[in-house]
Length: 184
Image (cartoon, rainbow, N blue to C red):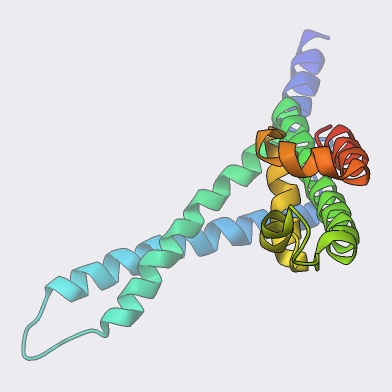
């Protein structure tokens, strides 16, 4: 009875329930390719050092082989299959990166929309406007307005905007709303 128990435990220790025959073959081929690239690299390095009777290897081929040796680092991906916590951490990082990407797209669209509104409203002031220089510098075109709004969103210090804001109540409401929604 104890021999049957030991045999079943030894057999279950060798089996991997999540293993798939196709993935095992693919990983074996991958390992074989990496080992072969290491062997080829060693052979080419040896041939590079040996220069008898004008034997000269193409150096670009050797550089490509050396760059392919970096692929050996990809073997670490196999470890992720066996470590569930590491896999979950990597998966969470990728999901977080995707969320940051979409937030950046949404913020860019909001900055673009707000800059178009500001350029149409304040982008072409008359020369008798007391804030002509400020509006002509910051809101004369959409890219300049986008950069100004990005500065306000990333660092909402409104000291330089004090005078123009005091003369334009609509601009006060617009900038304060933009800072409230854009900073969070």
